[in-house]
Image (cartoon, rainbow over all chains, first blue to last red; front, side, top):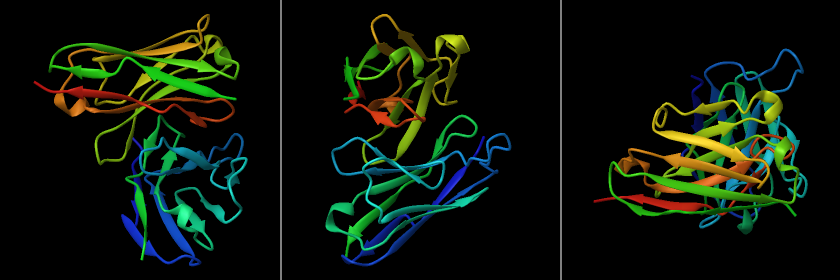
Length: 112
Length: 119
């Protein structure tokens, strides 16, 4: 089974700052067939269902602000949020769907 | 607009059964793999089950934690997906989300169905 190690567990930020959230997989998520990384990022606000932000590691879902940037390949991935806004305060999860499906443990983004 | 609406959640006792449903609309349901994901109170997300489409023989996959106890199924004629949960345990208490692969895996989510297993 693929294990997803997500860090940090929580992050306290001020509006306007940049933050990075990391996910490391126990094996490569890069498909040799289509050269896509089977890694997605989700945002979950309190009391809401998760919302897809990024898929195939770096493709932004339609309607997602361009301050959300996904990067990485193979086993190491990063979600960067530049110029954090109050509306970005939420829990963030990575998901691998290369082999079955595994979520990272989540990162809580809080206001400093 | 894509919509997923779960129903059927509730309070059950350990070892009992419960079946939750998800009604889909706004996309070609028969072309979409469907999933169930759960979230225990105050915890993270856990993938539970997946069912593929007819061309893929409706293949099903389960997390180890529910294998042998839960069954995912779908009715393409009704645009419905189901999760039959048997021999429920207290650790199955969670919000259960129905999700779809409209274009890519888990790009659409329902609002969730609450399942509580307690004596």
